[in-house]
Each structure stands twice: as structure tokens, then as C-alpha cells.
Image 1: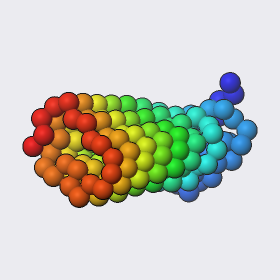
Image 2: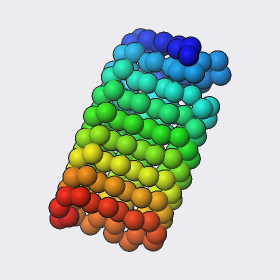
Image 3: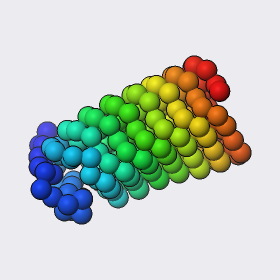
Image 4: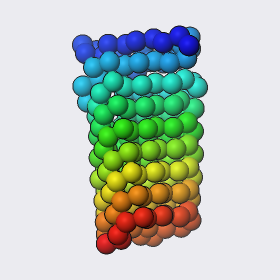
Length: 172
């Protein structure tokens, strides 16, 4: 397996994403070092490639992707895995609000806890939260599955149309 390393320390998010998309054509795996919680990383990747971030990422990491397998060895900001149509996003730490918002298919996994509005307006796919999820989890959900292994806040599955939310812990 050929691995392409990208040092994101002195690059803008646009430069990082350009390098990721170019590398995805020729490499099986892309390792991004020093992401330093920059926003919009790995946005719009449509190649079947493995992308690994060695550290935390900011808002909208892995947004609008199809087919990529993204692993974040740290935390993620708001809207991680937003509007993906396939593939997976795995966060080894915690994530902010809106994890998996609007996903059409694929899987979003956050090993620890997330903020509010997890899976808001999701259409299909699976979201797995290893810890707690905040208020309005699954609001306006149109399909898919949300699995929460901890507790969930107020108004879980408010105005749900289709889909299912499983909660192992307490429901406020």
C-alpha cells in the first residue's frame, strides 16, 4: 500500500484539499500531519481512498464526500461528516454540534461524545456515538440509524419522519 504524507502545518485548507484530491488519484492512503484543527479538511473527496488525520480537525471535516474512508486521530469541530453520500468518517475523540448532519448514506462514528443536533435532517446511513449526544439529536430525521451508547439530551428525534434512534443510556 502506497502512502502519501502531507504536512498541513503551513498550508491553507484549500491547499490541503487540493493535495488530498490529487493524491487520491494515485495513492491508497493519505496521511495528513499537523492538521491543527483547520476547517473544511477533506471536503468533497469522491475517490475511494483512505485519509487519516494525525490530530484534531475543525469544522466541516469530511463534508460532502462519497466513498472516502476518513479517520481522525483527535477531535472534530462542528458538522463532521456533513452531507456524505457514502464512505465513512471515524473520529477517535469527540465532535461538536451537527455530526453527520444531512448524510445520504455511509457511516459516521464518533468514539466519544458529540454536541447537539447529531444526525439532523439525515436521509440514510448510520451514525454511531460512543458517548453522549446533546439536545435535538435526530431532529427532522428522514431515514437511517443513530446509535448512542451514552445518554441523549432533550428533544431526541423531534419531528422525525423516518429512521430510528437507539439509546443505551438515559433519555432526558
